[in-house]
Length: 141
Image 1 (cartoon, one colour):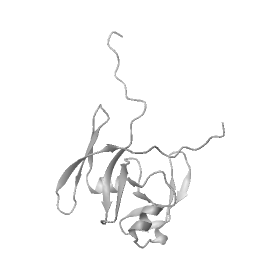
Image 2 (spheres, one colour; image 1 turned 180 degrees about the vertical axis):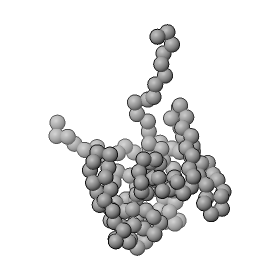
Image 3 (tube, helix red, strand yellow; image 1 turned 180 degrees about the horizontal axis):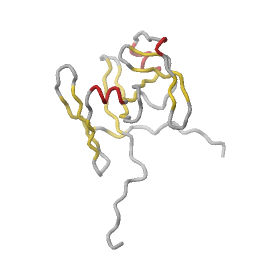
Image 4 (cartoon, helix red, strand yellow; image 1 turned 135 degrees about the vertical axis):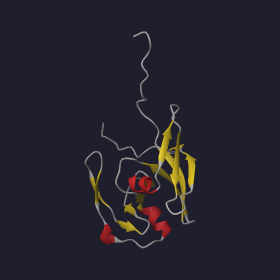
């Protein structure tokens, strides 16, 4: 063809927003539109010091079909995982509650607009690229 075809990048950086949790812990929360729960790593939960509802533990299946049992549910409606490659994932329950709208730009930037369900106030937050790569596993090769 005389005109080149525009295609997507093979890989895009994960988008994060900084969150301060109860004035105690700041995390880079990854925006994840493809999961049914909000997840947080165990060490972040321990820093918060909230009680954990162990009777609300669930088994989550990952994209690669691996399954992990959560440690329990925080009052914040956040499932706690023992080991993850992230501090916190903001998933569909958060995105649905806040009527989130994400605008992705061709340069890789994104902005997310969220609405407080109690006050109906909206804010738009520019996302940032994740500051560290996920954990790499040695393949033995």
